[in-house]
Length: 396
Figure 1: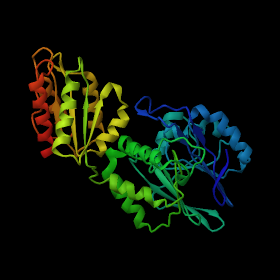
Figure 2: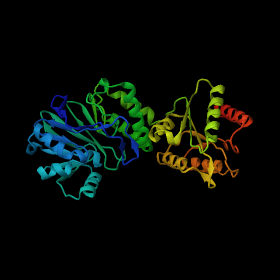
Figure 3: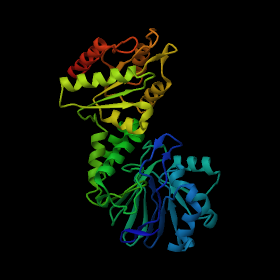
Figure 4: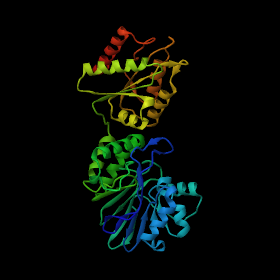
């Protein structure tokens, strides 16, 4: 359980290799995750966060082997969400009077979830606590990154930023440090985490990054709440976040569709062909929605400069799978990409293009044209029209 982070700071969290879904079933965690808890032992002994409730019994038992629980001077709750605070009830049964330092919103969150009136001490940005040996904890509120109660904690002397959900990833590893894991997997999970969780708060994040930089803090380690700890060149992930929080785009067009009898699939493939013929440099990615991981698709949308969405018409509208995915994009407030639509009609009614364009516009996308309309299964002529449509998309 105990892994030394630096000097008197240890990781005392939990690696969850089996986790496959997070936030209910809203987020796929194909690489598992970690719940990072930290123990600081100076003149004051401080526990920063706990782990998810299913592991509470083991967490408290293991922690008691690392330190006499009565010797914990206080707990810092950077965030009240259950994956961070879930072991607090079991721990507080053992040490009920130990102070918990958190934001005012975290008091509401923790009371609302656990219905306990623990010994709360409210802190705000800039507040400090002396923990001895010349070291202090400095608190920085991180409101809406990604909950109203979120904050980060900075340890002077060791120059560690306990960043909470910012800069994390859902990535299970025993190696724990960023330079010891597969870099491709790490950055894919990092951008997936940002795209699916933090995208709606990009404007807030930009301001918060500026605020943290303005403090003039030396940051040697970024100790996240999930995934690896950024020990080697930790500011690399801060640089990435600054890019992702801006108008981030790669030279990519993503096509996402669902289909009933493969008509939309054929059109999508021909559109992709047309885009590539007109612009060989652009990366075109094509996804059949029901056969894809939605959170991975959201990551592709996040990276794209244009997104094409396709559905057949059914019941005078579109397939519910596509409607749900567009709603997910709306929730995440993607407002920088252009979009288009394509469809095939199995009964000639043809409402799906209009419905899709309205939904995409409402989701914050700039709809660049009326879309490609096609009746029945595309023949050779209609396939060529789809190729031509793809070329037009590339020119746009």
